[in-house]
Image (cartoon, rainbow, N blue to C red; front, side, top):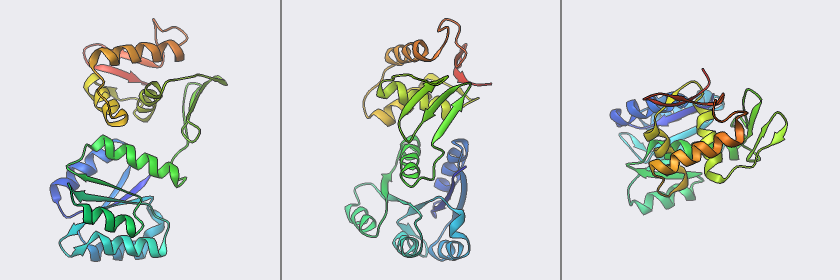
Length: 225
């Protein structure tokens, strides 16, 4: 489980983002200011896998925190910036930040960026496995019982989303939002039906009686119990 340091002084954002990221499988520690962040990093920087930094803080700013992180650690940093604040974006990147996302942002887009950076730093679990189905995120490959299964980019992303949310009932709207965030293109309800059908045809022994991606009538879909 990746441990994320969230440095943000907006209590509403902290509450909502913490709840969302915890549901996505992350461990979150949050502080609301520059001094607290620097103190915590001085004590236990090695316990974190990534830092999410707001630029504007009640006591100081995220730039000082980023500068301290990059001076002493290899901790990846994502800045949360005000929309259209080009100066903050450039300054953050010049200080060594790995990415930025403008407020207001779509939470699932942020999760996608977090996963990408964790993989880049070798901090993510590179293999996801369920009942002989293995996704190697480092190589971008899918195998079942030792045989590689060719998937399109969106089929792969859809499977990855199911694998990251094993045991959870995922509504069609959740899946549509996830594909929209990842693909950057419009995916409608009919298209989602087609992708689920194609994915089942490739990974299921019997697509008519699926063992991996099960339909939960009236609610959506679920992988795993």
